[in-house]
Length: 174
Image 1 (cartoon, rainbow, N blue to C red):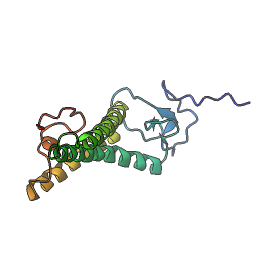
Image 2: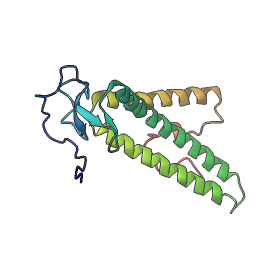
Image 3: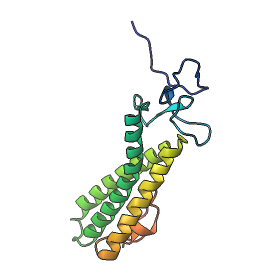
Image 4: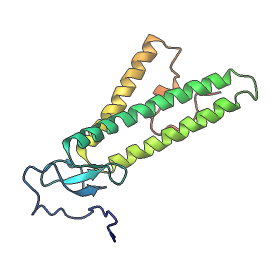
């Protein structure tokens, strides 16, 4: 009978048995002590959000970096979509906007879930993942600004004025 509960490393890294060409060591850390890299034969492997998602080789590390980049992009997309849904609901007759409001609430829930994931990834203190998160926010903000300049009526002003990860208010709405 196997009683292995897949414990994750949270302490010091034993590099005595790690090969010099190892991508990283350990079975997945959830928080480093200050910003570090999660690659190298003396560096702990990083656990990306869920058990089993250990960034312990180049392909997984790249996938983690891509995920850390795309989550902020998705947050901004959800914020913008939610703003458009709320705007559309405002044009409906009283009572018929209920479905729009429910959908906007659902989008808000997804946005907050992804924002929490970004917070957890930031708390890993893995430098490259953190830079990918910032790059994702910067890229999506840049694209949103360009879209607004090209077609000012299609992107809600509220999407640009507040932090996309944490905006929970509908201040720009009637």
